Image (cartoon, rainbow, N blue to C red; front, side, top):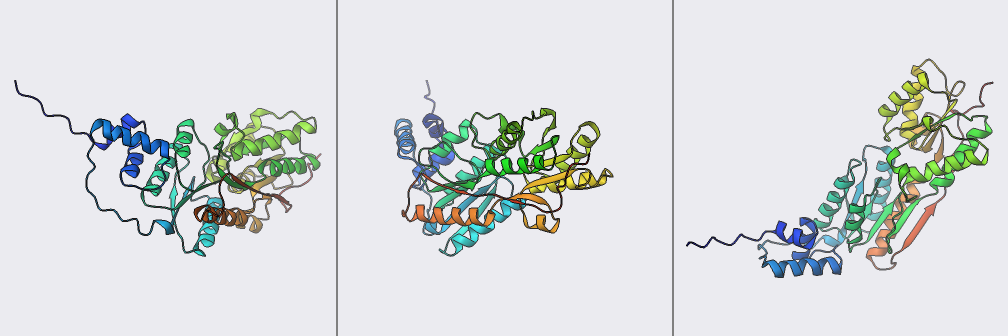
Length: 344
């Protein structure tokens, strides 16, 4: 009887046996940085057990120490673009080039972006997530590479984070609207799925919590029907507000991002109403265009966040600092012309 040839062991077999991705196996067998000792040991054990033979490939990591990876949820969002620019400008002073990848608000794609950047030989990462699932947390915990998180805290023991006082900013914004007599407020969050998280890490959850606390302190019960998700998108928010004007009752709109405030502004005007005489609008970010539109908003220091992220990552790479590190920058209420006293 003829003996069947043994199945050739490929990298997918090793990944399945070790319980990791093929990209992680590739990093281990090629000696790349960014893999923890525990994961590396599991991969090597699987390689030995299965008898995997590594293909011979050229390897060039000579410039690995001068490349930085940045993962953003949506590069078209002006706030993300501003952050990236400040990170690039800061790291350019130290001779680093920056590689940017857009996860398009997809948690799974964001991890693929991280693995691609690590495989390209980056010395460190800046990661700007909107939502992290358990599977993504497990992958991120295994990364043995300097990484700075922006806008969202994570529960990793050695995690480094740079962000804003989102809770306080939203709290102060709500208090300001209340001081103008507004009690019926349409609250537009970026991603409502983040509000149900047990963790308070997401910026959506922090902002919404600050907003609700301000209302509760004033004895006001927020009508959950006035909570909508604008997906950090101007056109989406425009349609939502147009619809809300016809079937909801509110005298003010508070958005968790300026881009959504722009959509809300356009929707109010196109409905034959005025800002702020009929409906007040309050944003959150203070993007450059917001001053042009004279939008009242909560200012986040994008320059400071990006600069601190770049400096912190550089210090981590140079081993001048080690995790955990946390830098929280203040927010400020910028009063302009889009909020007014509620009409009697």
